[in-house]
Amino acid sequence: MRIASVVGARPNFIKLAPVSRELRKSFDEIIIHTGQHYDYEMDKVFFDQLEIPRPDFHLGVGSGSHGRQTAEMLCRIEEILLQTGPDLVLVFGDTNSTLAGALAAVKLQVKVGHVEAGLRSFDKTMPEEVNRVLVDHCSHILLCPTPTAVANLRREGLTENVYLTGDVMVDAQKDCQIIAERRSGILQELGLSPKGYSLATAHRAANTDDPHRLSSIAEAMEEIGDVVFPCHPRTEKFLRQLGLWERLKERVKVIKPVGYLDMMVLEKNARQILTDSGGVQKEAYLLGVPCITLREETEWVETVEDGWNVLAGADRNRIVALARGFSPAGRQKEVFGHGDASFKVVQHIAELLGKS
Image (cartoon, rainbow, N blue to C red; front, side):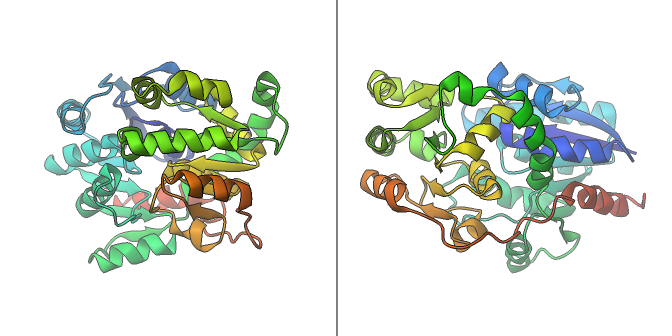
């Protein structure tokens, strides 16, 4: 039986890595890469470092408006599904690639599986939130990372083929943490000491496309001072347009995007992490690093409830105050599972397809 895994962006690649290894023990897998992330630092390096098989199809869609990008993916994925005839299409997370893969499959009456189902920020101004809801409601099997995700689906009337698997990113971190520490020299390259810096990322359109919010976040990073900032290409473009790029580089260690192994080392050794990324919030939690989220809401509510993540929005003063004063109290709970989520994902897919 054949499974088509659809990916296109950094968070998808990380989730695919452990799942693909499990899938190939029982299924014929093809990988469709939409090309949503299209430069080496944000694309091929993840396949190399995470040892993901080379994609069978690379669509090279690239950037564009949400509508144009999703529509182009949808057309091209449909062609491939008609050509290859998979028994199930597996999608990951909440990107435009996730939505396009799910829609292409369900329109062709091909079963859809959603890894990381049930997440909700309850903010439908976020494109990712719209993607999550739509994908969940057209999927045939919903593979949830947490009990909160299961409860969210139940409130929306989704109870059939809903499974609590744990989070596949726990599996990915277990696989890669030792490799990262052995292979990455990023701390030495940047002249960093463990716990001697803050790490920041910012890429969401709500922050980058709003001049006031982006300026406030940049000014907060400048005031905090000892910040390492792997800068997303879109973020760099908007910082340059606002005339903030050169000034920021004088006060913040701005670097190009890094691969997964280097990013894991940077995250693990940071004193704290400032981010608007859902995946980085969760990685911070799994690594035991305090996180300040540059948003007013989060889909990873467990990290906030457990006291290791705090919502700062884009308020400069609040970001700075939290960077100087936020300290988690108590130990973490294992809210995302124990590192066997990928096995459970494949087990439930096999049951759905009658292959158990």
